[in-house]
Image 1: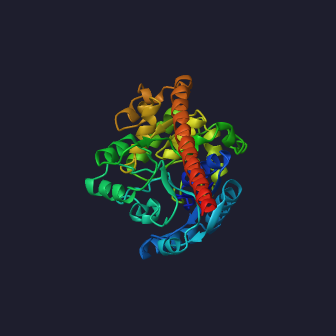
Image 2: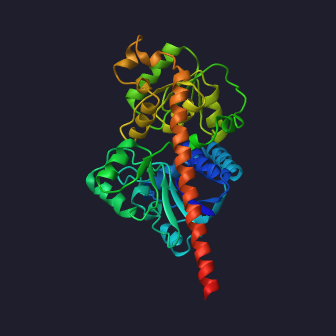
Length: 373
């Protein structure tokens, strides 16, 4: 059975998008199906955004090139991609052929946060024939009714629908979409040992890791307070702009560096979903600094494992007796997380098996009709 996956698989900085797309790809191929990631890379940036991006990349040219080479190498080693599609028109005119199409993970179903949310390609609008399904797309936040209506209209012909957040599931069900499942991000579909094999040796000693996607005065202040509490040197990365005080800032980290920095850290401070995901996978001590947008998927994940107290706010960040500084008991957390992992794996496995059975039956029926004719 041929399976094609469309998702945000290769952004410039977001290591999590690369890891989640590779995670879904490898889980499906491990089940015995032929899978490919659709190499869909539209450019949604405005002229001013492009100019700003070029200026930043010129300023840090060597670091950007080094990071890009590392990410491309990782994708080559851990996934198989189709030919390149630069826009929706190209994809619609000559879509890749498959039996099953999966639109998967990341914040691809929110028109207010990401341009992908208004792109029909991420709702499989280019598919002429084949079974449609989703695996763990995110809406990021509670959506206004017009956005839910838009999503529901786009996915009305999906055979299987799963999302990342419980709230998104409830919103779709209320709008009339049935049999919606809430599952974990694809990075959890692969075993911890798969990622441990990719970890590089620790060259920093003991350190606190800071990985931030956004820069605010509040987060800078939180990092200062938390780093003083922990006392270790601070290693930071995330984009090209330094977003907190640190002893070392890494601009050219690749995917293996991302995994290694998390794996080797004593403590972690982050606002990133996938940094928290791998903190859980590697059983690390971490704190979450909420962002205004897209916090729902992180809070959902923390709710699953009863770690809501790892969320730092203006009150507990300054309180030395706060529960946020307690060590996570991974004996309890591991059991809760594994239960949800098993549920997610079972759902995706059964969905693909059902697709295979349907395709096989159709082939047998077509053969019988041919012979009778």
